[in-house]
Image (cartoon, rainbow, N blue to C red; front, side, top):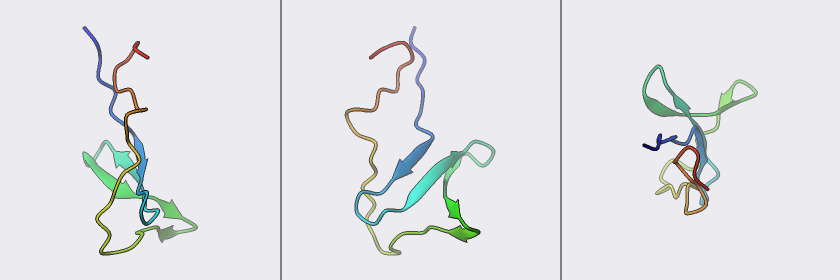
Length: 61
């Protein structure tokens, strides 16, 4: 059986918003840079950079 490895970070290809997975809250959170939260554009319909090159299965390429 394969183990699914979810992504831990993502970036919007449209506005540049960066997020990381917060396992304690079980949700995506915006990255902090120099004590500022990097929100990106507030009305962006985010297009995340997780695409066909990402392989979520452990031990498979």
